[in-house]
Length: 269
Image (cartoon, rainbow, N blue to C red; front, side):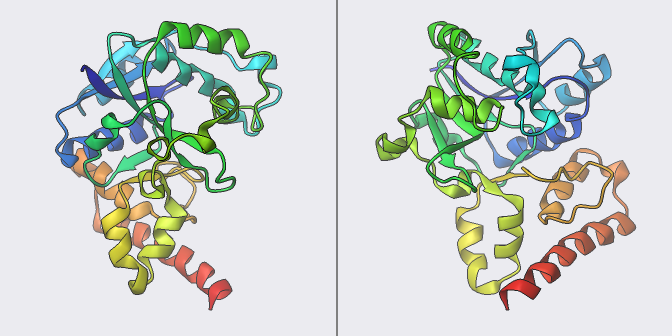
């Protein structure tokens, strides 16, 4: 079987740091599987070079517009997420593990390639639906054709790809267990931070946490990271860009995570 890890950058260069850190984390996990980043024409040559240096093969794809001109998206950044469906067009591959550009691999996860389509972890807010940030899929042009044909007629509860895919694969929750990934394969960063801060839970986390998902705040954005989990991401990013690491920045990231722990502590004690 030919298989690959796949991610996406579209709309601008905004998610390039995420893909750089993700690529570094995959490399450090020891995987030998191919890494492919789909990019749209509005991603700059400099961005393409940057992700190539982290081991990604760059493939240009056409953007796929959100239905209803994007009027129904929950967040404005969801406007370009439907281009993710292009992963089903990568038919030179037999199996794809799709990873959002805001994920980070903590352990080798090559075992995901043994999962059937569609395999994904439950969403944090609605666990009877899957989160589309980490998915195992089988590229197939007929599947992609059916997706595109049904875009305008299929309801998406968040206006984005996740709501659409949960309706397209509407039987996911009742599928055999191998279609449902343990939460450690798509662990939200604020949950990671909460568990990391409590020693009684930490040993379980170290064993089960495999992929972090920065679904709320993105560590590389200029605003302070107040939802936790910044340290693992920055550790991987600085591994790719050691020239940017300073003692002051390390202290600031540690302070961000400490602030989250302190706020949460007020409510759970």
